[in-house]
Image (cartoon, rainbow, N blue to C red):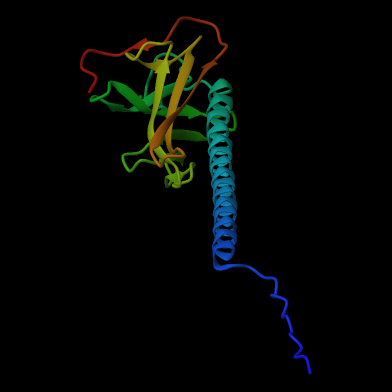
Length: 207
């Protein structure tokens, strides 16, 4: 009687090396997808921060520009120089001798309210209405480097009358992709269209 020989067919499957290769490819693809996702989220956050900054800075610049362009004439009661002999439209305030710039501006708005807008020593931009309490007008999320005001391109002028040109410069810091802070500088010039001569020169004994 002949013995029957049985052949067992080898089961198909992955070898250990093939499994390792597949897992390695999977992890590489997954890591790449995660990096792309994280990068996309960071880009969206950066874009949102920049948009928020642009919105707030645009509001501040447009607010100051609109108010100073339509400011009412004042003899000094609002501007902080009482008993002036001529009409003025705004006065620069909070002179910083270290940088030789003014950090604030006072004006009488067209609704009759007296305002001061300034860059405070705590690093925030604030507004005071009719000698009341100050209030921040820029989110503390953003780090303001400076807010400066110049009349007619001359740092020595501090009272604006007749044909004053007010230039305001604002610098705000935000983080870049590498995590470093970069300065974002905004500047605009506003003209007050009235008749007469230019602004008042700074006296020699000005603090």
